[in-house]
Amino acid sequence: MTHEHSRNSDTHWHRTRNGTETGGKPKKSEQAFESRINTAFTVTREASEKTSRDTNSYADAVQKSLSRLEELHARKRAASQIMKAQARINEFENLFSTYPSLLDDLVPCRMQVIQAGQEMTQAQSAQMRKSRKNMMNAAKRGLDEGREEQRLVADASELIKHYKALILAI
Image (cartoon, rainbow, N blue to C red; front, side):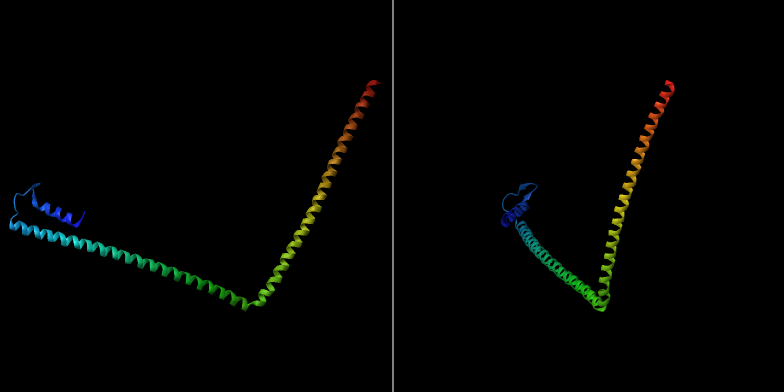
């Protein structure tokens, strides 16, 4: 709705009473009243538009300020993290320079422990293979002995049957 159209509709509203047009020319007092109302509407409309523009400008300025603050915070946080990391590196370097002989002794000691563990594992592996082989041989001997006993029992049963058959035949 344009300004002019809005102003005319406001004026039109004041010229009607109970939904009907007033007849003829308006009176001077009505014209003065209407003029004051139109002026008041115009001033109010302009104030409203100015307030709206000012509010939008303020909101934009606040948004820009918040963006700048976020960027500043991100930069400060990154700088802080870099400083913390550098401090940790410096602490490690100080420890390393303070105890270089300890670290030099630690590496060969660890190597000896690792090598001893490997040798023990290999020795246990050989012992386990030997133990497995002995168990397999013992199991095989047990099976062979069991088969031999079964064969002997079967042979003894055959002999007993023949012996019975001989005794019964006599």
